[in-house]
Structure formats: structure tokens, C-alpha cells
Length: 456
Image (tube, rainbow, N blue to C red; front, side):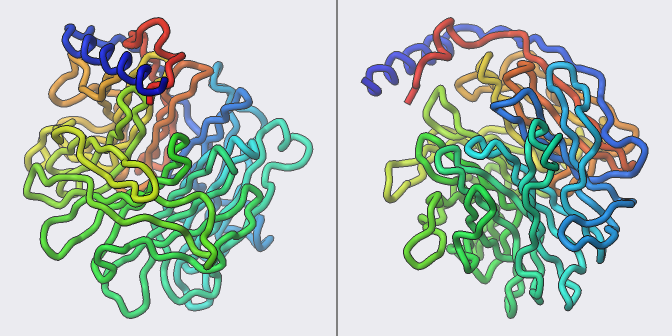
């Protein structure tokens, strides 16, 4: 039956491709400022699928609160804001999630866990360990309905607080089946010149399931690895770990590893082979990847930037084979989402992806700076993963900012909110402002019953 449904779906996509697609129509809201009375940096969001709320997070750089882990006054703190997504109004006061009494915070990441109906937050704390290096901080946050009476923070903790090695870029994901929480981050191994990447697995309540961290850089561990990200794949019941690697034989490439949602008998993560999934369409380092599952074609859409964003960026497509090997194969040619040369029309970095499931539209969202435009820009893709017609060569403009949005990781993100029927884009500018914009697509690219089809 699945094969028959897939064939019907494939025929629909062939028909859709053969027809001239309509230029998308959309509306863009005015920006909503978070915590405008202070200075903030970095930005993340998670959409609650059970309650009418989204949790926005940012870092307060002039914090006057106490750290929930140590009870000490924090120099910087992760702050959270519950919002009603339909009206974009804040619910309750800002919440303090974690703080750093010994320095700055960086690389903030958040996800929603539908099994526990809670949020999982991670960040790196500068100067936290006795030797003055960076330590991961994590927290599980209640939804607003619970936070009103039981408090916002369900649990907060640090990992490896006595370390002499730095942790940095963080990413988190949650299994929608067993609720287990995946944490990944960059790591500076002792005696190695490059950065590695590691992973940890927790249960839904924040209990550690893997007592020892697992190294995820398998192909060339001695070489540098950067920009890790992780997603849960419901169809495969596995996590997808993506990062860029610095191989000895070429410029930087993008790799993917499939990780099981439960630990092995040795207490470590069960990971498949690390496999390269991107081509080098241009002779520059590829980096800062993001990926999303395409439920309409059974493949994955990935995005990357070139030369730290100065040479544009590409869309790449791949498929995952069956367990236990999960062989990754390119499913079509890699194409640019932005053609740029030497920072023209602008520099951009860290493209992010989200899917409007109501209209069958994917969004690629990222910053723009040091060129003809300063702010946030975007591209819209149809259900087959193709760029929809009508987009300017220098992309759609989402919002112009008075100061640039940082090229660093975790300064902007995008998620689709089904309750409001909008993409929510959060970004933090170098002027210390964190803001949110809603983009609502008004053109539907799906047939009437497409939302009822299990396509693969």
C-alpha cells in the first residue's frame, strides 16, 4: 500500500513540475522586540505542538539575575519568553533558564520535546571550569501552563564542569517516540590541533543515558570539524547529525551520520558511518549546513554556504537507505540558492530551513550583510524542493536591520508554527536587539488531499 501511495504522490509531483508554478504570495509582519530594555545576543525558538505557545530564547548580556544552577549572580543569562503565536503577545514574565557567574554565554540552542511537553535548552559557558575553559550548560523548561504554578525550569545542570578542554557550538534534538534528548557540540580534544564533535544522550527528564561522551568525527578525527547540527527523523526513528569536515584531500565538505535514539550495550551512542553528502560546485570551503526532511519526495534537502558566506550557497539533495546501513546517496544535482562572488550582492552565513506543511512550502532563511543589503533575507521552495518562481536574484527581503545580524552560529533561526500558519523567524543584531518576524505564505502548492497522504 505504501508503494502505491508513493507512486500516486510521485505522479502528482511530475504533474506539478510539468505545470508552470504560481509565484508565491505572502505577508510579512512588523518585527516584535524581545527584552528591548536590555542588550541581548543570539536567538532561538521552539514551537509547542500541544499548546498554543512558542518559547523564544536569547542571551541577556547585562544580566541582573541569579544562575539557577549555582544560585550565584550571573554575568550573562539565557532568558526565555512564552508567546501566544496567534496574537504574538507575551504570556507572563521573562524566565531565567541558565546563567554563567564566571563569564559570557554562547552558542544557544533549543528544541521542543512532544513526549514530555517540555523544552530542551543548551548553551556554552565561557570560563566556567576551574581551568577557565568553556563548559556546556543544559536545562529542561516547562510549558507556560505548568510554569505558572510549578516554575519554568524543570531541571538545569552542567556537563563536565571540571574539564580542561573547551566545548563550543551546540545543537539539540528530541525523539518524538521515546522522548530521549540528543546533545551535540564542538569539542577541542587534548593533543589535537583541530576541533572534534561529540554527542550525549539524555532521557526526557534529563537523566544521562550515555555516561561517557561519544566522538562523532569518524572520517578524519585529527582534522577540523565545525558547525554541528542534529535533527530527529520520525520515519526512521533515528537522529540525523550533520556537520562540515575539513578533509585532507579537498576543501571542506558536508557530512551526515545517522545515530540511534537509544544507547548501545557499551553505554555509548550507536552511530552509523559518517558519510559525505555534498559536492563542491565551487572551489571554496563549504560550511554551516542545515537539513530538513522532505515528506513529499522521500528525500532530504540540505543547504550550505561557501567561503564563510562570501561566495553564496547551495541546496543539495540526498536520500537515506534502509537500516542498518543507512547508506546516503545524492538524489539530484546540487544547485545554488544564492549566486555571489566576492561578497556581492552580500555576505550571508548559517542558512536555516523550515517547512510550511499547510502549503507545501520550504523556507531558507539567513542573514545578509557587508553588501547591498543588511538584514534578513529568504528563499521559498515548492514541495519538490525547487526554488519557486518570482524570487529576485538577490533574494526576498524579510526585514532590514539598523545593525548587522552576526555571521556567528545561533544568531538566527526559523520554525513553522501550524497554529498561526506562519513561519517564525528570530534574529539577533549586533546592536543588542533580538526580534521576531512572522512570514505567512498565502499560496497553496498541495492538492486538496495531500495533507492526508503518508507519502513514503
